[in-house]
Length: 463
Image 1 (cartoon, one colour):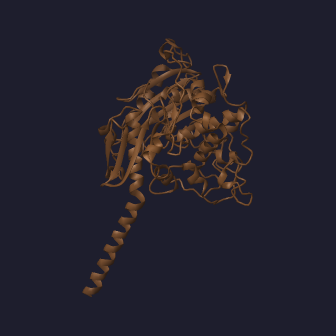
Image 2: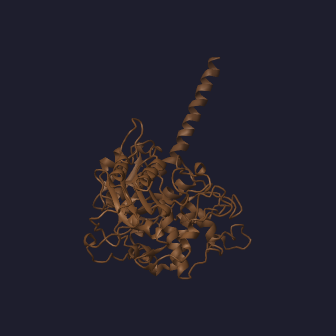
């Protein structure tokens, strides 16, 4: 009996050790990679400090297992878990931070990104939205006090065991910025992570190329890995990718090691990693939201524009044309912008992006996106039964005739939005003349988006 017990205990110990080794092998590089990348961007782009980040962005398990070394001279952050799985992220001016995996540091630093500078204007004296000067008047259609109470409430922390952590709110009504607030330590000039809002910006860049006749989204996606006509992925269209219906067998799960976390924190070339996945479904038949699709789109943009003009293209084709002077994408180590996840901008600039779509792709009288593009963006394909997604934008669909079946039941059916994983959002509600930006670090679903938007809508005097 004693032998049986000893053997059983030994077996349990061996299994436990095996599990621990497997977990460390698979997860430690993701933990240290995420932390190094996050800390690098937040310090060198947003101006936060290491202690704050360790208490907030990186406080929860498993990221609390890691330790981080910040090198201000080298503009880098190195993360490791108990000394293992070291990962280094390097900051480069104009393009933020890039995480290194297999690439040599000198090779990464030799990459050239010629980013155009914003025009030399004082935006504080230029009226909104072309600049940052706000009018003294207030629109008659909005109850100012009621709106401010709603905005203030978004910064409350009503839970003992949860953290809402709203960092910025901007409300634009009929084109006019009518409310704005920031958490302590944050301000209107601070670029902040948009995370998966990057997908919507990537789609907008596709729109600019469609307008120039350089891309046709109905045609087969120009992806080298699928060029063989006998490859079942050969018929994936660019529109399939935009609508998250590529059919690729790609798992989007941030709770552990999955396709998306491996892509973001273990791969130097994220598009190539995704493109090498096999099909799980026939293209165009099943909605499967993945960041991999968005990074394939980003590489298609790079190939279409060409190496000479690619680095500057987001600024020249989009950001600077709509006065988003703070905005930029961060690239992966291959030099392709991470179109799924790494967008940085101020809250006001995110609002300007929302206004571009609110105004049907036109800014200051200039058409940026092709005619009809916005309508295509907010139209879910027939195979998306929930009607929840368009061209890299989320929709309030499901059933437009029954508000109780909408994702946000108290918000009009025409609302659509850019959505980041920690409740970074740009909500566009054309029927209510609203563009609303909310940025934060909400990781526990404690922020009630439906109630927040309903309260803003209720601040209209005709409600």
